[in-house]
Every structure is written in C-alpha cells, then in structure tokens.
Image 1 (cartoon, helix red, strand yellow):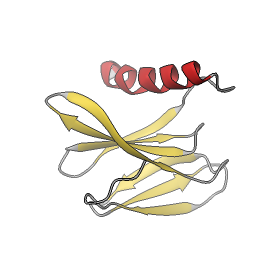
Image 2 (cartoon, rainbow, N blue to C red):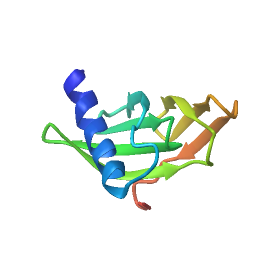
Image 3 (cartoon, one colour):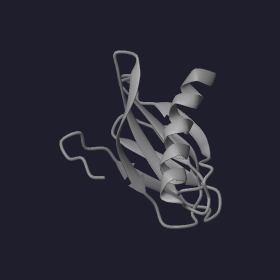
Image 4 (spheres, rainbow, N blue to C red):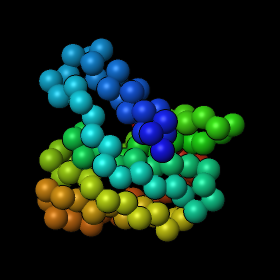
Length: 106
C-alpha cells in the first residue's frame, strides 16, 4: 500500500513543485478501484480534483482528471461502475461524475 501511495503522490508533488505553485503538497485523501479493477481513482482534497489512473502491467498511468470547483474539498469516493459519487468536505455536497470511456478530457 505504501508503494501505491508513493507512486501516486510523487508525480503530483513533482508536477506542482516544478510549476512553482504556492501549495506544493498534494493531498490524496481517498483511493478507490473501479469494479473491474482496471482503473484507480484518487480524490485530491487540496487541488479539488479526482484523478483517474489506468492500471496496466502493474503500473499506474494517469489518464485524466476532473477539476471540481475551487474549495469544495473532495474527500470520499464511491464508484458504482457508471458513476463516481464524490462527497465533499468543505462545501458539504455530493457530486456525481459520469464515466465515459469513449471521451477523455484533460
């Protein structure tokens, strides 16, 4: 589990450190697999993003992310197979993200 955490966190930290962002520490709060375990989803509470990683040959490859409104603070995720439910900490909302494998947007 520690290796998985470091694999996700280091690229995020490195990316924002290179860009000179003020908040250089990324905070992955929740990590869930999709039902078929081919994708991994990460709620980043500091950046208000939900990251998607494809799991292929034992490696994680970031495929896309959903940028939520600033300050919502995504905390917990539930993946149903077709949607991801996001529970936010700061705005006290439940956000539904539809998953469409045919269309990828960054």
